Amino acid sequence: MTTGTLLAVCRVHELLPTKDTTGVTAIDKRAVEGPVTVHPLGLTGDVQASRKHHGGPLKAIYAYGQPDADFWTQQLGRDMRPGLFGENLRVGGIDASNAVIGERWSIGDQVVLEVTMPRTPCINFARFLDEKSWVRRFSEANRVGTYLRVVSRGSITAGDTIRVHDVPAHGVTAAQVFAGLDQDQAQVLLSAADDGRITLAPQVRRSALRASKVASPA
Image (cartoon, rainbow, N blue to C red):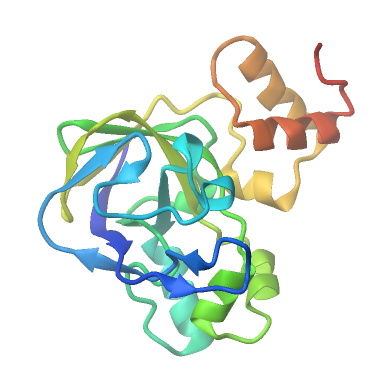
């Protein structure tokens, strides 16, 4: 069993205006002290301004790994503090971008989360960081972190131990989904879902169906 550490719990600091139809973004997240309650749509005190793109039960929590943040610190020459990627959880000892679709994370004594899909960068993220060609650079590096759904609610606190368990045998990761599945990866994902071993997010299933060239079942 892989273990890691919850380095920071982050939630929205200030809603910022956008030029899209939503009108605001909750990308500006900051680390908070003390326990935070996790519920099916994320963290108490947080905001999902656009659940179509960055929220809902399958994108309730966004996690980013400290090694990926350290990579960007070196690339950009600036401190990539917890929350700067819009993440809810900054984690150490776990490769969030290469988490296996369907694996579960137990945090502390109560909370269980399940990896669902990679994060897709957007223009609001780019404007917030104010880095040239940020969406392209972030995408090409494929250090995108992962979304998770809430299996068991409860309370989490920075410093909690994260235990990775129930890792599916298919082995396909969030980063591989983001990069574009090959036919073999698509087939093993779909087989695992059809056998009831995992539940695929609709976006991931569509990607897998396209890559496998298998028609969607009626």
